[in-house]
Amino acid sequence: MSIAPQVLLDGQILPAAQARVSALSDGFLFGHGAFETVRTHRGRPLLFSAHHARLSAACTALNLEVPASAPELADRVTRLLASVRLPDAAVKIVRYRELNRTAELITARTLPYSAPDYLRGFRVMTLRQGERDGRLTGLKTLNYLENRLARETARASDFDEAIFVTPAGRVLEGSSTSVFIVKEGHAHTPPLSLGVLPGVARARVLALIGPERAHETAFTLDELLAADEVFLTNSLMGVMPVCTLDAHKFRAHSPETSAVRHLFATAAE
Image (cartoon, rainbow, N blue to C red; front, top):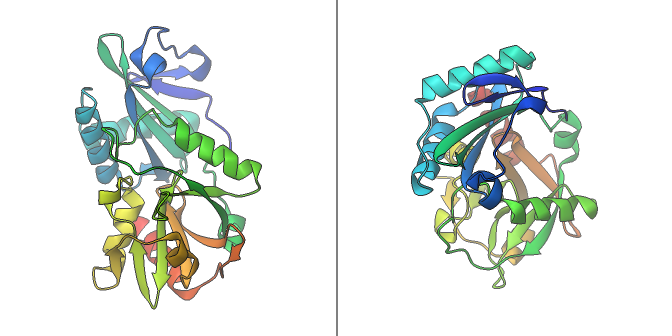
């Protein structure tokens, strides 16, 4: 995975090394900002209206200026992709407090997932985390260190992802993913009331499967381990099968997960 050598800062394309953030910026000093990570295909950002809506809501909650309209912001993304010649990319849009104004930074990098990841499936570990009820619950903010450390812990232990579980045993979400289980042909994912991120891919999967077979349901770690299938979602990976959870093994090529992955990929085209 490589990062493009140019970024778009406040509407201007610059070499990444020349992009500057003030040392007194609240975004830098306190993580006062919000971000979205968007997948692009052939130079076009996917599911962009949902990403734009979530970013706008986060900016409002954080007392930041909301971004430009969805078409205008998508045009900025397209400009950067054309400049760096990277049509299929992972794009990060960051809005943060820069002294007395809201600044915007857009970066692009190559997609982090490849065909072997989906063939093998993800190896996932569990980590304990307390109940969520803070003001930042459900927002994708620059205060992201706990998630980053969870990902580092997983990778240092030869796992691909970490799933947060409360002391009471309730499953929340992954460090950068939403969690789904499949049981008797029905898909279940933890409800937003537990403080999980309202994932764009998560919402898309729920809509694609439909309310008769997809449910927002709290479940425990024991129920997760007893599931027929487990898969993860985010905007970059789409639908990723889980082959290992701690020491427990799942089939990576299970029928429901494969069908959902195909549905998601087809709908995103």
